[in-house]
Each structure stands twice: as structure tokens, then as C-alpha cells.
View 1 (cartoon, one colour):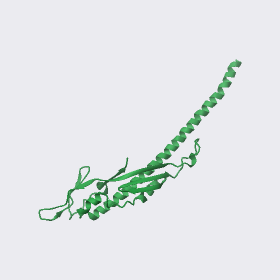
View 2: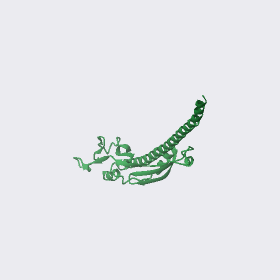
View 3: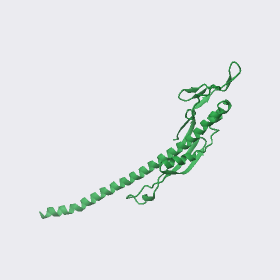
View 4: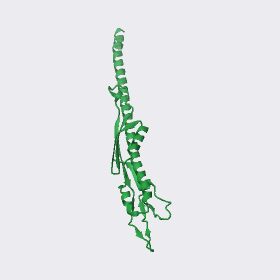
Length: 197
């Protein structure tokens, strides 16, 4: 009888050690989860910021399209992005803020934006030392891809200039009448915006 009580007394410290170890592992997994969530927040903010900057430039190009639609000699430069003013970083800042982050860098290049962000909130306190002041960083790139082509301008049977047919991806096309310009392609018809690989 005495021996049995002695064995039970020895098992109790082992039980406490195992429970403490399991609790530590649980808190460690929680810390990893906090860090992963913060990292995901940073990546979401970077993706949204890069896309917003590129979409702003795409919309500017769409606005310029309306101004040159009657001059097909300028179409190719616009569709190639040569008329683009890569100044959409202000939109990147807005979208990063909406996603609880701020832009550390915004690099526009020809029809492409690369945006670097940092989360505003740190990972927070955990069993892993140093996480309370640790912020997550991420970056993303978005590109503006032209979607349309056209044949060279031509004249009709009466010698009048005819606007070329604008052919875009997804089997969309526009036969533009210079006297009735009511059905013009939208910016998203002319250009696709997507995250770069």
C-alpha cells in the first residue's frame, strides 16, 4: 500500500511537466498563427495596393482613348502604353491604409507597379521573444496588359476615312462610327490589370 502511494507521488511531477510542455506548444502554435495572420494581412495590402495603382493608370489611359478615338494614327501608342503617366502610387497608399498597412515603396515602370508595404500593427505579444514590436512586410507587382489590336486605317468607297475595327480579346470588337461615338470600349475592355507572377 505504501509503495503504491509512493508511485503516485512520483507520477504527479511528470504529469505537470507534460501538461506544461503541451501548454507551451499550444502557445507556440498560437504565436506562429499570429505571425502568419499578420503576414497574410501584409500580402493582402500589397496585392490591393499594386492593383489599385495599375488600375488608376489603366483608367487614365481609358480617358485618353476618348480624346484620340477619331485619330487612329495615335491608337497604337496608346494601346502600347506609351501615353501612360505612371503616377498611380497615390492609389497604392490609399489601398494600403484601408488594409491596415502603409507603403514603404512604390516603383512604377513601363505598365507595371511594384509596391512594398508594412503592416501598421505588430504581430503582438507571444511566447516567442521580440514579436511584440515585429511588423510584417510584403511586396506585390501588378501589370497593365493591352488587350486590343486594329487594322491600318482605310478609306470607304467615297474616299472618306473609316475608323478601323478594334478587335479585343474574348472575341470583342468595335466598329466605330465617327459620327455616332456612343458605344466606346471601356478601360477594362482595352487593358487588363493583374498581379504579376
